[in-house]
Image (tube, rainbow, N blue to C red; front, side, top):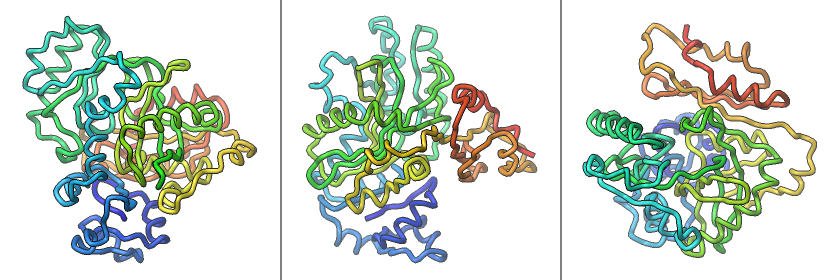
Length: 383
């Protein structure tokens, strides 16, 4: 069963759910595709008649959590959704695996009274319910703490939030110890027996230690080979406490040498917007078909293949918060500056902070290409 919602539905997802004829909740988003695709759209009453706690449920976005929380019964699946979405709740799940990890929650209006001098820095400050890197701060000094509080105050009073409270909420924040190492994102699901199936592992590339921007993710066979087994071990330990089945997720970790520390677990979805589709370009893996048809990537065959390229997804964000209405983003000109473009997914940049997504195959000069992407000003493609 599928729930589609704003802000973005992947072309590959649409084609996949059409091919599989999966039942899709009738709403404004799903109906916007109905004239061009043969979709199996059902109304809310039929959706609920077919729903049970062990059924496979997937959403493209956590914006649908608002409907889920209001409509689904309080059963094992809906409780797991709430537990994973709450960052402190997830920390409680993994507490027995990482008993010395520091974290605490605090109401937004109490942050100004919190004595940061009593905490060992650096720490990370972020909404307890969040998405992307929205509202995430790395605090290394009292000055950075003060600056973060000023920005949070502005965010809380601006009303400038395209996501609902179930996706990003500024009512409560979590303060947790800074996790060193490289950041990785994992798309996968727990099968009908509660065993984990890993569909892809992405490395999040940053411009610096203080950077928290979502701009560049990569995957390649080397990454999968090195971390597939240890990440599966962690995820199976998580489910010893969560005890869930038929459940898709997007899992984020930091890895420092042999130490793997979870950051968060995002329920009912894979990587946001269309980022999860990189698995199709890199490994021929359709993540949607895998989840609904109980398929697993044949990693051994993939490892034996002769394609050793690195595959990247670039989130083409705006540098400036506003552009003249007369200017249009020139997607065609991207090919003049970036080679081996596999696909470009356009976004409505009149309402979003990004121009879209660019999928690349990178065969050489990886670091130089990464640096160029991370320092790119995509506003320059406005004409």
